[in-house]
Length: 164
Image (tube, rainbow, N blue to C red; front, side, top):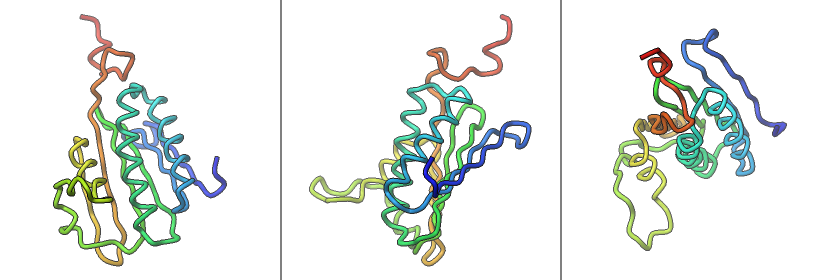
């Protein structure tokens, strides 16, 4: 584990939903810690590999944005939960923030633009997407995906295990 990473996990008895909290330094190499810890957490709570891979792509984009744009040395916090038939992750930085309404335009940039695709892609590929930011107050991005892989080695719904 990255010596700068801090991990806290709560099972269902400690909280109503299983969750994991990981704090990392805002450095590109730290994002691997997030991917590994969230992957371990997802597998432990029965998230199917395909669902987990798609979720990690979304979460990874949110973490990459926080590392790239926060302009802060404060830790980035990532909390993930399994909530019923979804996995949800929030990425919070304490960076410079921005006026959120300017980022709520979810159109993709022109084909020749060098950047600006992260937020629209996260929005379009998430079942849950919440963006909160203010200048000087940091940014929080929440993404979530419903499980799509029931019956393919993925998570099981409680009613799936009942006798028919």
